[in-house]
Length: 377
Image (tube, rainbow, N blue to C red; front, side, top):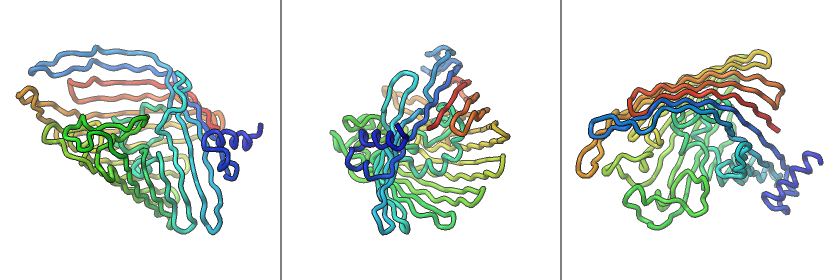
């Protein structure tokens, strides 16, 4: 079966036969799997002024699915410079069989030759499209919440509406609105009353954050030749629970980031800075600095990165049974090293090391080694 015929067959099954037959549809996918070794030091918790161990140090080998996916995308020319566009992508677990899970991009929209595009569904966020310039490694463990403050609430968002401008001599911009409905109770008074819509799958944002726009993001970027520069901002428009306990994230909070990149010939570098409280790493404002670099020679790529995260407020107090308890928030340093060998344009092998040093007795350090392969089609 030819690839175009197979693409139409899959598209018909996923999005309905009648519409797929008239669109320029492409089937694509990526199979990514690795063998990982993870080592964690002991974790501790503070109880009445003393450190009590609640999890011993551990190490283990594991077969890991590194964000494999299968999808279709395409567009239909509607005439007059207007086109219908869509993407329908599923996560595919090649190690444990949890196939076709949610929160991969699934959206539909319209694109104009002069005014840009409007798309609705589950989509990469404007925030990620700026800071994600540093997402250069193969292991799914690297660009997580310890390295990227936008991991949970600014990577892909469902229930989103995005407007993207055309490219104006290298300049472009995006704006996103997230509207996630409501569920009982409709007027939450405590963080636990934020809830998820039934059947929402991997929805990243609970319902009841607000009765209107739950989240909004904007981003502006400039790309000209080897240079990239971008700035982005996001805000959650929900209630404040900070008088009870600082929450993760700040439901009425905001976060911003800037990123810069240079990619010319065999060299590529990027630098990103984030600050805000729309993350699950720190209670209150946190900040993150992340620097990456890579060098390509022949079929070989060597990569390295360093990240540093810290909290603006190193300590916070919580009332437990009428008694104030003080918690300490920790700085963390991350080092990542990687080697990639390209067997072809679509197939690669990699070895990557991830190390983390946490400045606290409450959270253990970690290190991981990932040995994997990736095949794109």
